[in-house]
Image 1: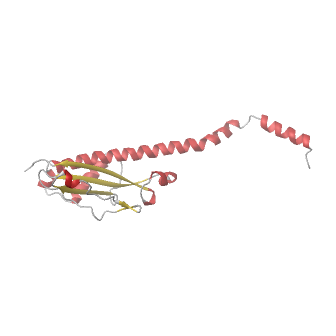
Image 2: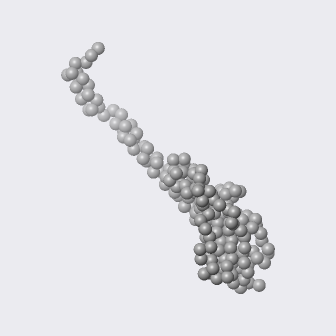
Length: 183
């Protein structure tokens, strides 16, 4: 059955005047941007909290090197990494196995330490081959770097917030200091 032009115009006019379902239509238009903003904000907050926790963990762990406690007790890379993981995971459940790396280098002066580290992320992969543990001796300049592979949770934001392959973000914390003249 074909509608006459006059009846079709009346049907369109009734459609435009109808207010039933307007709230659902408005919600549908606003839901996607609202949820994108909410999940993006939650993701940024988690990354920021993890970065702050890593900074705190590095500061606490580096203190044992700065005071000479790590050197006098002959702590190994594994022990320092374990201590860092314990400090890092105090408030945030993280998986340190295969995700947390530490690089400790010592230098005679601050000038020698300048530019000593190359960028550890190459082609989206964290390069850990040059990482080591050399806490130095009394009054040395020591650089402590920690790297953590944080998995971006929301798949939509992996390309935006990630700076490594597979939707990961490499969190980095660095501390440089002159160790105390312990003996």
